[in-house]
Amino acid sequence: MKQREYKIHIFFLTVFLFFFLFYFFLRITYYSSDSINYALSIEEGAVSSHNFWRMEHPLWEITGRGAYLLGALLGFKGNTLELMQLLNAVCGSLAVAFFFLIIFRLTKSLKTSLFCAFLLGFSYYFWFWNAEVKFYSLAALFVMLTIYFFTAESFLAPAGTLLTGFFFALAMLYHSANMVLFLPLTIAFFLNASPLKKKFSSYMLFLAAILVFFVIPHLIILIKFSGINMLDIVTGKTPLTWFGVAPRLAGVGIHEHILKLPLFLNLLSASLVCRGIEAPAPELQLDIQLAYFGLFLIIVMLLFIKFNKKIMEKHCALSFLCLLWILLQAAAMWLVDPYNYYIYIVLIPVIILLSLGLQELLNFYPVLKTVSTALMTTSLIALLTSNYLIGIKQCRGENEALVKMKYYSQYIDKADTVVFLGLSNDHEYARYYLKCRVINIFQFFLDSPFQSTENVLEQIKSGIDFHLSEGRVLLDGDIIEGNLIQPQNAPPNMNMDQIKKFFLRNYRFKPYFIYYGRKILKLEIFKQGIHRNQTNFGKIYLERILCNPDS
Image (tube, rainbow, N blue to C red):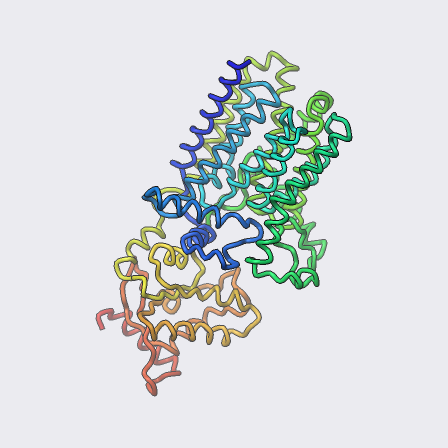
């Protein structure tokens, strides 16, 4: 028995080391705006700011800040983005390793356990987010530890129950979408075969752990740091959408949710084979073919129906937990938003059910054991190859935005202010890599969707004029030179022609440098009394300097 446990621990470490190296060395190099903002928040460390404590995942920034300070102490050579990816790789690989232990505890089969662990680890969303910057992996690790202690034989012992509650509280603090697991866990508690009195006392301990480690810290963060007024919540002025699972039904017709149903089904089926409809990075537009996703869903359900009696006899509480968890997660994706995290985390209960059905299938048809290894290996290789070639490969390699920032760094320093339209990630990359000040035009309109275009442009002008009084202000030349199409996601008051005329009317331009035909212009205020409000003069001036950059 001890020798077998030793062998399993060796496999646990092997799975962990394999996926750590896998995730870190195949990490993403195309970063989203959220990832860069997250890294900036960690570096700035403004703990008192409500932006530092995000209510849907309040411990992300403080964990990142701790890792950042520790990395600086230990002399970590990479940037904050790479440091967070290192932490994600550690937590993601630990989650896969604990998943291996969970499946082995349930099936007693090394082959099935390894197959399911690698199925989860190679899955598209699990792979992508464990190789990215945002801390989905930490939330998944604590979910995994919650299930690990829930499935232990000593689960109803005080220590087992407290550990289950403690790790579930951390799972919710690292992503509030994990609250959907509360009801399945509650029902699973009382489906246990132990005496009712023991189950009830254990459940009280579980609730006490959630109260101490989740409810109280969450309320402290909410009141002290979040910037949310409790009175507004009580009176309904501020909806509790920060919980991440609260259905946002107000003002939304039921027909809109019905129209979302096909999308939800696609997301759910895509998540089962670990692929997503939504491109993982702004540069990607993946056309996801769902033909074999539906087949996979059918296989899981048929296996469960076929061996329903045997599975329920052995794992009644866990089976109900997984089934209800999937249904509630599906409802959250449909009623709220198909967040990436929902697709990411729903893989866990689905593959648990798959492992139970798969093991019963192998026990029922012994002849399948002879070919199962080849089938499992082939399917994992196919999954790994397709997910890399179609998805992950597109998020790696030389990041064009990084190359651009390296070039920009020759001309732009920290004292400069750069005005971007804000429809791409350039402004985020400039903030992070150049450490310069940035004016994001799109964000101004996004923050003031009900104000007139003129009022918003006056706010932008105030910001530009303030920075002009302190130093150099540069403008992305595409704003006034290019024929920009009105973006679909722009607020109704954001008019591209008016923005162009605003700059031509109020400022002079001098070419500063050119990057592959993209001009960066230096702004100057018109001298008082000289064509201050004449747009035509601005156009003539711009045409002259663009045709003759040396003027």
